Each structure stands twice: as C-alpha cells, then as structure tokens.
Length: 362
Image 1 (spheres, helix red, strand yellow):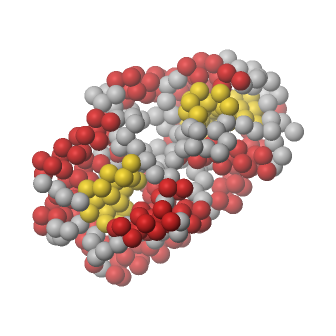
Image 2: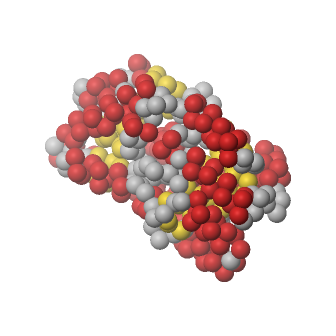
C-alpha cells in the first residue's frame, strides 16, 4: 500500500494544524498506510512527536501532504522532492499584522504568501476551508478540494470533566458574564478589541463581567504586554490571560464556564474554536471577516460592525433573551453535524483516493 506521510515546518501541540496532522496520521495508520509526520520543530508534548524532516526518505511512489501556513526553508526542499506532493493550505496571516511585534515572523509570513504559487504545479491540492480554496483558485491551482478540520467534540467535552477542567469551571462559576475567546495572542485576532468591548460592557451594562483569553503569546509576546497595558489604562478589571491550554490541561472547562464566545479577529483561515464553542452550546458572536463566514455558515451571530457598543449590546441581548439564546444554540447544533469526525474522515478518504488517481493520471 502507498505510504502517505505529512510534512510541516512545526508539529505543535494545542494547535489547529498540529491537531489536524495528528488526526490524519492516526486515521492513515488505521487504514493500513505507513504514515508519519515529519517536521523541523516537534512539540514534545505529543506522545508521538513525529520525526525530524532530516530523516525523511523520498520515494517517487509515495505521497506527502505538505501543510502550508508560513514561509520556511522546507518549502524549497519539498518542491524538489520526487514524491507525489499534495499541498494543504491553511492560509498565511498577512505579515502587516506582525511586523511591529515580530519582524522575523513577519518576514516568514511574507515569504509564505509569495511562495504559495510555486505549488500550483501540483495536480491536486487541499484547502482547510472554502475561503482558502478560493484564494488558491485565484492563484491558478488546477484542482483544490476542501478538507475541513477534525474537531473531536466528545474528547473536548471529556476534558471539561477532568480534574483540571472541573477546577477551571469552578473557578469561573458565578453569576458573572464570562466572555471567552480561544486563539493565539496575536494582533490579527484583535484581542485588544475584546478588551475595549469589556470596558464598555463593564461601564454601561455589568461591572462584574469577565473576559477570558485562552492562547499562547509565543509569536508576539509584546502583544500580551500591550493587552495588559490597555486593560490597565482603561481601568478594566477581570481580564484573564490563561495562556496556551490544550484538552489535557482542561480546555473544555473554559468552554463550559463561558456565557458567550466572541471572535473579533480580522484574519482567519477558518477558526476552529468557533466550532469548539458550539460543541459546548455556547452562543457564538463573530466579526464577519475573511474565513469566519465559511466556518459559521448560518450559525451564530455575525457582525459587520464590531464597535464596543454594538458588540456589548449583542452580548447582553444573547445573555438576557432566553428564546434568542435557545434559537442560536439550536442552529449551531445543526451546523456541527457537518463537522462530525466520521464525516470528515470520509472526506479525507475521498480526497486521498482522488489525489492518488490524479497522480496516476499524470
């Protein structure tokens, strides 16, 4: 049987790309394929952190899925492999968001946006969302199919029942409004706008409201400091910066404690936490930007205006209007069926079958 491996610059834990690579590898092995993840950076929190890319051995009869989200020295190496390469595009954050915080990362993002077009020679490519697919088609990729992210809702819910998850839920359990966002602390996700929303909400609606931000700051540590400074200058209390949290650290507990999930990001290729919040029947409010509409479909509430006043009033409406809240949750529950693990697994199998046929045809 054909070996199907995955290649990526960084195989990270508690990360959407890392989780996707992990799930794909597990399924490929279950289906009888030889499969491994090769990366230059491997997070040791994984039970099986994959292998260093230096150990990758090419074979023209094997397939390699290349997860693409940033510029990397791997790009040139992968382009020169004789293997059947399937680029899998997760989108590249526009470098302008990071230039003032992490110039080197911004340089790699710029490189990533420039070099993506080099992969259009591939007869078959994958995209993590329809938003990403449209971008690839615009660049001239001949055949692109959407392979959405795996979100194992039962596992995520189970994390809320672990000792860590229960501790988190108990810590935030109260009559307070808990506004949650999960995502890396980076400028494009605009957690600063969430701090401004909390300022308005505390001042004019409920002074006890809390903002919980789950996500690491490794890519832009200066942005975390900026958020803390902004909260202090505005006189905002109850901003919780939880750091990077995965299911084994009780991530589900944060969703369980949330009153509402609010995303004001200005660039998302997809945004998996939108679905994770839905799995906990937490109403989702999101700024209608980039890949967010493709992730939400008709679910949640999408806003064209993310001013603090508008967002705060919508949060309060969702919190206080029981009928509206039930309606939102019902729509979200239906939307989640499209992302059930068995359906995504079926999609993966179909994509791989088609990819292999495209290479054989070539």
